[in-house]
Image 1 (cartoon, rainbow, N blue to C red):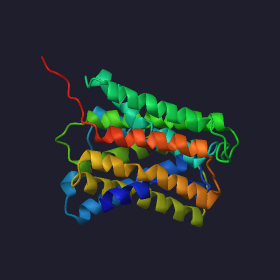
Image 2: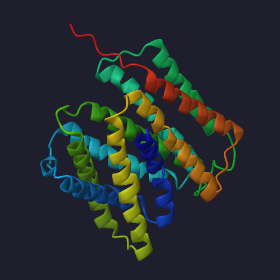
Image 3: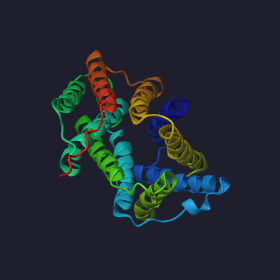
Image 4: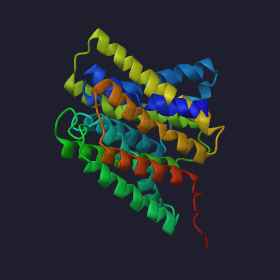
Length: 286
């Protein structure tokens, strides 16, 4: 449980690190994934698990890395135009969106409870989006664009969840993680080469932190937790991430949510936690 909580808390730091670095979303995303891959490599070498460092050409694995990169870029970009709280809570519609996708892709039929939770989370999103408060405009005073980018990040996250469901079960979780870091960094590399953003020494420190904390350590703790906890319990702890982001936005950047926005956020988080405890309905095979 400590590992699950630590993973969620570390995941929630990427917005703060990105803001303090002052660098573009493509640069932060590339180094989060590239350094995450590097730290994962060093970890596996230290554990004498060299055999787990291998490239896999499994299409679901490749696409999961691409979706991971797209999710991080859109998430960081959205926080330039809306608040950290609006962005992260919108993104946490993804698990329920993935449940809806599984209805069509995996034959996991939505019962009335699952459908009700999806409707409830959408209601929470609408409440939060129209809730007023000083957090609406964000840094760039373009809340509509910010929410649109957050919705794009949510879709990438949902596709990342779905793609992970399609990765062969026999592939070790460390190999899976290493490949996702690798493919995500690979797709971001051309953008870094095109923009050639100069990086100062303090900014390099923030990039190192991005690769270590929300990159490597957050993923490693998630793997440790998932090996020891039921998925439902881990899913509940994952919702510490939006809470962490909202607290950091309030303490560090003065993003104050209105009562209505807090209500909408609470509705989305509650729907996600309830969904985490619902059993997955497997398809009926004829």
